[in-house]
Each structure stands twice: as C-alpha cells, then as structure tokens.
Length: 67
Image (tube, rainbow, N blue to C red; front, top):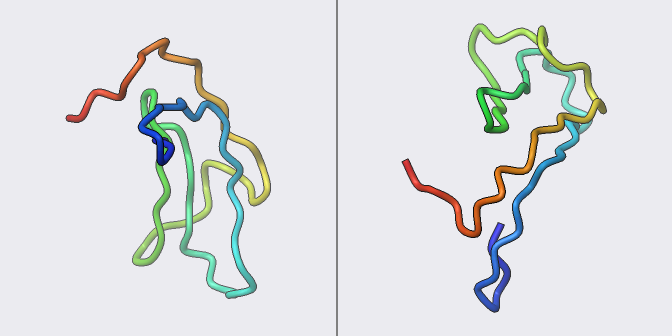
C-alpha cells in the first residue's frame, strides 16, 4: 500500500472477513505471493475460513512490481 506521502508498505497479513450478507459464494486464498479474493458466481468458500488470517512472506521489494 502507498501512503499519501508516497512511501510503500508491503502487506504480508490479511484477514478474510465478511459482512452480514448471508451469501456463501465467497473465497479468499494466497495465489503465489498475492492475496486473492473472489465473490459471486459458482465460487465456494473452500480455501480459507471466515475470520482466518492469510500470511505471505515479505518480498523485500522497495516498490511493487506492476504486472
């Protein structure tokens, strides 16, 4: 993430949460070294339980590489 003063801070931990909407077609996981979140369609919550944390290693990059 980039702050308003232009400094980058790498996110290495994220929590999978949801609101009060009762739908179940949501999912979150690590995809390689990236956080992935999907909603809708044929998705099922099969990778990460709600309120669990996802952790990824610090890449040590000073700025993100944009694909």
